[in-house]
Image (tube, rainbow, N blue to C red; front, side):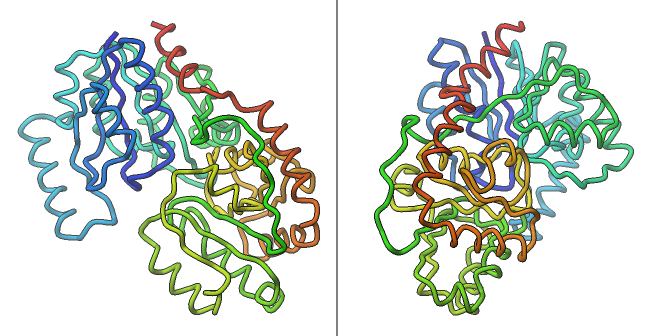
Length: 383
């Protein structure tokens, strides 16, 4: 079977939304299927895109236009897109893909409404006369779509063979925002960046070691909220360390904020590290102060390494762990709520090892070990 995957993610070269579709594509290649991947042409290629290329997948690169690029470059790319649309047609980005005549297409979206904001996807599915599938990752609970985009989304999602989502709260929000019932929807899980489901030995240290893992993008990940919460007399005086892992557009801003708050001896930026087990061997707890998440990989990975978590009440966090039992829940995405959760965690720091063991058992019962196989089979078996 000839399977095409389209990735809409253009906000982060290391986005977690790439994991499921790309690992499903690798599994498809191992099963002797033909795989075509249409991705944005990042300056730094995602490691999974490179692995797919090395295993024989056909990679079709699309020019990327995003807010992290210069104004002149974005203006040039926009002009080029408009010109190509007039000369070739509005589906010009996917002309090469359509010529290859895939048996099915899966559009993997970093957010929920990429198909509504970018009309190329609408034109693609109008030209394509076979089954297509939509995979949705992040979402926003308070978004209001313009009527044109709302109608476009309704049409594309209801015509899809299956709409895959990663969090129950996500589906609930999308159905409410679009005023529709997606009877063709199905919950899927993301593959995790750990070698096995194994409760790691707990770190023996008097100093509380906390970690935060994710793209350095403040508007989504909430680094500013966490730093504000830690900027207090109480937290500045106690024995703790926070390591922040990841890279991204706001690295300098985060560095400057740490310096402004005089927290350089407490907080370190450690860069990108894909060795999740190594990170958690040196940590007692994961912090995730995000403003927006659906089903964050790092929370699942922390729990499956035997570490409790402290998160904001976003996505399906309430169904992942129990507040005060296997983690700590900040009631809202505010500095006060995060500080309150931090203070509660500090008072219970002697229980963190036991909480981590409970977190491991809860996660092991909830998350499958190879979800990319189930995801691919859902599409292939439906054909």
